Image (tube, rainbow, N blue to C red; front, side, top):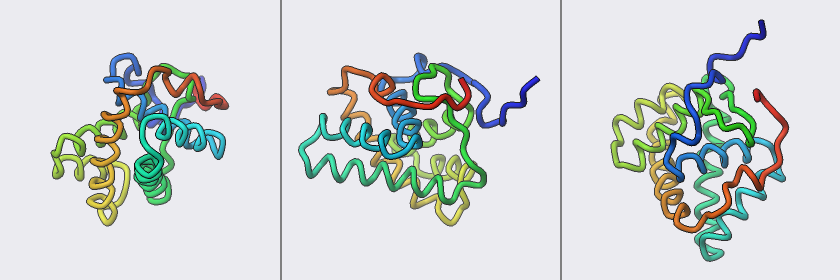
Length: 157
């Protein structure tokens, strides 16, 4: 039997998330796939906002993911861009952003500490609130799920 890192265990499906939440998970996956994926994520922002707003929104998303990846307690496990499963780490990521976007700062900061050290948790929560708000705005404009536009190497399934 193949061992799957606990963070990669499927705990749900992207179909059970709100559209903006599923988009954020696929943006995370795509961004982590490298330069081509990052370009695809930026193009999504550019389709939804004017150039200055797209740059600002992408910078916030990039700051969130970069900080998380650089300072996480351990590498976060994610599924491939095309996978419809929601992994445990991805579920914590989206729950964190959902709380921050809803203004539940203390709870979001506490959830952040599951992924990252307390030193960075409050800062990350502020960025997550902005990213969540932007994702909700983008959901009005996105008609093609990003997962269809972003190539990926399979990570889990």
